Length: 216
Image 1 (cartoon, rainbow, N blue to C red):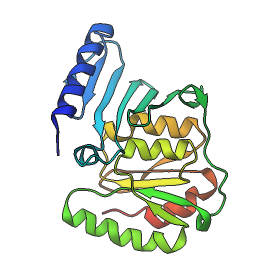
Image 2: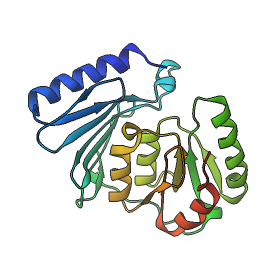
Image 3: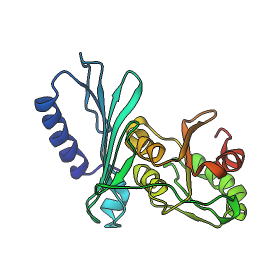
């Protein structure tokens, strides 16, 4: 689903970046795309969690990342409902409203609270449910917020211990993955297609990956 808020937010972000950073490229979920001359590109999800937004479920964010030749160098994820601003600069750590954050100290999979998400296609959701059947008995519990960028930030600040999901796009994970990594998380792609991402406290990364690292 797409709302007017998605389109309006992307338009405002696009216009601001065009004014402030006219030489940079742009990739936005709602269709904004521009080639740049600077070697940098902004990756924008103007409203991650649109279904939540439309249902007035308060788990949605704005996600903006900046890429250079070495990958994502800046990430910002803002949750307006809670007025929480997650941010990271490559090699400079991650922050929440200006204060440093770090992943949790969980060191066993069976004590880990793990987040995930589901695609929109019925066949993909069915396969994701089968994977979940393997994961659920082996962790403390599962959470599903419905916004990938927010899930990655929840790992970064220790509110969940791990996150995995398939069927993601660059705008879903660009900012959040940097924030999680800079907070100390192990962040790695899942093998096969569609594209998937795993972000966890380092101690459980291999065990969780063994459960979920299978193509759909």
